[in-house]
Length: 192
Ligand code: AMP
Image: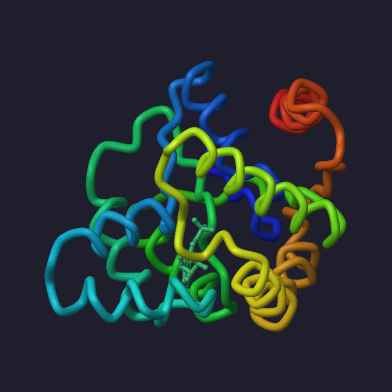
């Protein structure tokens, strides 16, 4: 079972992916996590990526597709959860080609729906709590960057909703409920 979790920043993709890893032995491929690791690597690529991410812009398709290609060559036994990838139609096409090369298929795309004001409140609130506890805060978790990330989502990523709907793969889940409620809604889709 290979699955995409689609949705705007702060919709809960990472939280839900983590639970699926723990309960279903799937692996989570988060391009955001991979890029944050690249950013901290001290390379020239890392420096460029850091600037792009801090603004809330998307990193180039070439870089993220390269990261996913590398990771898909490894062991993916219990299935893959794509978290934060694909984010553009070019990435979606590349993913299809990469999966086909390996004889794999995409089984479902779950869209987590959450309204904008809730997203901004969630992300900025989480950043404030982290800062108050002396924990590191992401450079792109301030209100300005979050609103820019949302605009990038609507311009470049939201077209994937129609794309996967047309392929018969899309299921939309209400992402506004408690974490357990969203978990249950996702489980219902996967166990159908
Ligand atoms: P995330 O952790 O998924 O919220 O991603 C944080 C940031 O990493 C995004 O705002 C983008 O700058 C970058 N990023 C993550 N995934 C992608 C992707 N698939 N395509 C382009 N940029 C990405």
